[in-house]
Image (tube, rainbow, N blue to C red; front, top):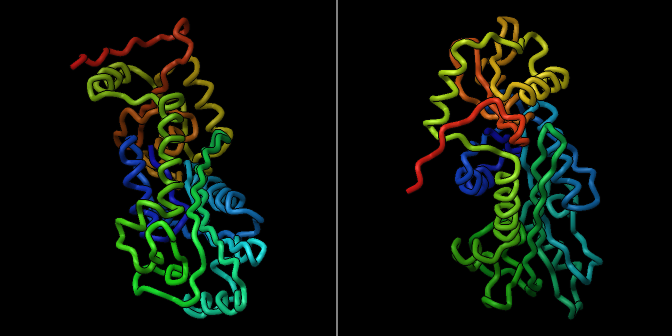
Length: 302
């Protein structure tokens, strides 16, 4: 399965790829698909903004998409800057200018409690949504400290470690940060999702299905409209009845056979068995054991 990252941030790409790779998922950038989608963050919560970005990319690519949104909330400022963290003070300000503006807003304040929040959202073409959140509690320092990090890191102080984010090593920050906690929570959610929804084929089972597919005729045609809702609904219905199907990609299709196969598999919880030339084979195990038409060879127990 491929999932599209609704971000252009290489740091997020690295963090999320490491988690999803353990489940056989390949994370790709929008640019890998020839797209550059900018989403206006109009949500009033981090969750709403994360969902807005993931849903926009999912609709454009017809593939599962993942996004995150994060920010700083300061108690004495009634939760500000919140969802406006990256735009606090207006457009065009540097990170240093933004955190100095925040320090100025807290002049004379003894309540320095603050919280970094992060929310991750993953949206599937089937309409299913996974979300996870992480929080790191701290205080706003009276002056910037530390040279590393970015954004508000020099003024976000964590009493437990007696350091700001900017004074921490990468290992220290990754062990307690809001994004690290959100990623950990998301990993648990995604693992549960995979157990319930995604059937992972072994190499032996894949080879067996390729053999069965040799006699199949294509029942799906991907044309100039690419992979749309009607085609996904058709694929879903045929997979439910047959489990193993073959598709054909026409010359006027904007997608390659592999891209079409991955998009349909992602939208139907199927598995890409094979792609050869302009044809592809998909499989989805029938959840009702009494209706199964294909018995897969079992993996040998170690």
